Image 1 (cartoon, rainbow, N blue to C red):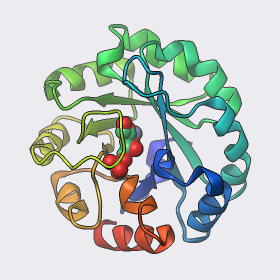
Image 2 (image 1 turned 90 degrees about the vertical axis):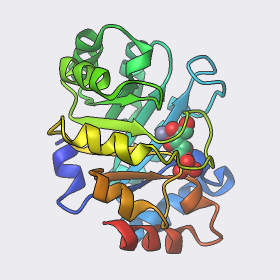
Image 3 (image 1 turned 60 degrees about the vertical axis):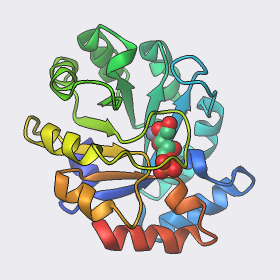
Image 4 (image 1 turned 120 degrees about the vertical axis):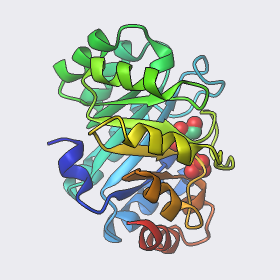
Length: 226
Ligand code: DX5
Ligand code: ZN
């Protein structure tokens, strides 16, 4: 199992649980699973690599069984300074994949191997200021199965999509074989352009959960892009 089998030919919308209503988290996940969603994006911030502390293994452990029982996967986006330190706990808490940042380590080979050693699929993320070819070299060294192009400065949900991201995605798509994920400010209005640029996994936080009906929003975004 890994990114290739999770995505399918058409690509996938991955709701970012960071933007969910935490008083109704299980209910919202259940409803999205019923709507056909199978990839959930789980944003981990340590208050150091990014300013906020977000969610971590305690929340992951509580939601992993229901997602796995329905055949879904949890994609953990680690916006943390020392990603490898966290891999064993994320693996034992139910993570299927970890995506760590180019800007967080200078040891792509070691960090990628550490994730695989505990059974996690490996993705590599890079920030809007990072040079795309540098990120590609890093991702190849890490043995990444997924490349995540940030389309916002990581930290908070609800920021606008940075318009230069489509050019960066296209540049990335010309250089890598692995699927491309885009994260930040993606919604119904821009998903088709992001897809045309070459992305296949579309993270959507605000666009799903700020809607009074997250399932309807998820369906509209998916209909517009996958
Ligand atoms: C930001 C996170 C994103 C974010 C996306 O630091 O990595 O995954 O939750 O949220 P939206 O879709 O609202 O930009
Ligand atoms: Zn994210």
